[in-house]
Length: 321
Length: 258
Image 1 (tube, rainbow over the protein chains, first blue to last red):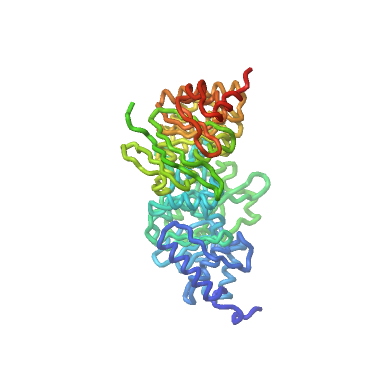
Image 2 (cartoon, each protein chain N blue to C red):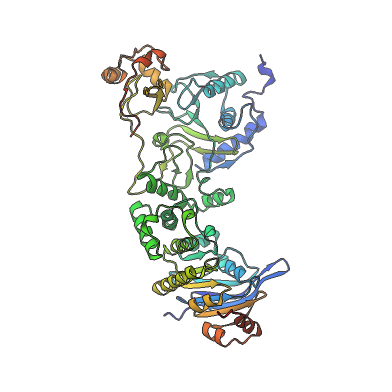
């Protein structure tokens, strides 16, 4: 085992943390603006959250409680590894409970449980530039941000409607922050976009490979771009979570077998487990029979082979509307 | 007709190091007037056009433009934001190679609609209707609206580029060899179209070309350039029928007679 003494607190050296904090402060001062920073090599490959980890390492203190989610789940490789990393290098308390955490590092989801003032949400961002695929020149996109030339962003949405009859962008849906900068909310589903709007929590975004940090301070306007005659709307699911019966949450499709069996379950595992543990609550009881089917309410965080014989919702509508 | 020009250019020079791009160019352009700039390649035509359209900054000289509100603004003193706004609202720039002026990976409709969205139109139905209207004006079938320009022929691309530029109703259009690289029958139709649009919309245009026939068809006035300097200017018919400068005489007599 590596001894903690061989690392500085939270892995990064103090000078680096200072540099990153400076970038974060600038990002908070200019909501949605991408601040360049001297991204460091981290003991993980690019694309695994090097930006998010650096931001977390710079803001974490010994009293913080850390939660890490990957696509909403606390128990996937990325989330488990990063949690273990900070447990080792910062000796902080870790949790899977959204309400208990002071820092939540996330890859591609915002927890269903409402965030509070004082909490910090750290996003891992692969490509911070929302205009990248429309205008590949970084010199040009920076100028476009500077001059607030965002017509091109709507060209993309126009193309969606022309091709699919509606705005088909479902993740990394561009938003305008505080009426000024157009920002990529990282590849979160657009379902989560409204949660960013005037959120009481501080939202920080770190892109390690692209060396950019940006931020949305608490209670900041975050408006999803749209057309007057094709307004922004989030996905609606035509069935509740198959495990906990939750409605109006983001669901993942889980394939159960090779015969078309599948089920939709909460993408936020903590939210789902909480609801099932609290199964006596009236809201759960009402939905249980329709949604949960014959599934025991014990603790099914992942589908077991037992489910395969009789998957819930077999043959029902496949996808979200 | 107003008695005030649209664009006033005075002693404009552009040097690339010690080399001359264009030197001491002075002229006025009136609303609705088409000015042709002719000369052989390397004579400074394109440098002049790029300076006027503020894609390049000149080494010395001034150019003033009369804005829609009647105010005269000096082009090279405007902020970049203002220049770019002017560029996508009141001006147009038609490139010789349509790929330079179009977004090749988005549909024809979006190409036409981009300027509208850039100036704040946020109504999909209205943008699309305008795009349909403009495509028909430049003789592109409505059912090609969702095709990418990559699937278009050279002539169609050039017409699409023209539609994209004219959709915001500009008052001044810069054209750099608009018919270059097209075969003659396509050229003829394009010229016909351009002539119609220019007269219908009362556009002022500065057309750079090495093709004297294009200049004769499109323009009322022309400037002949050689080694960065204007060697002769005047009404197009006068210059072509009665060239005075020796270089112009050479140029006119070099036209191949079929």
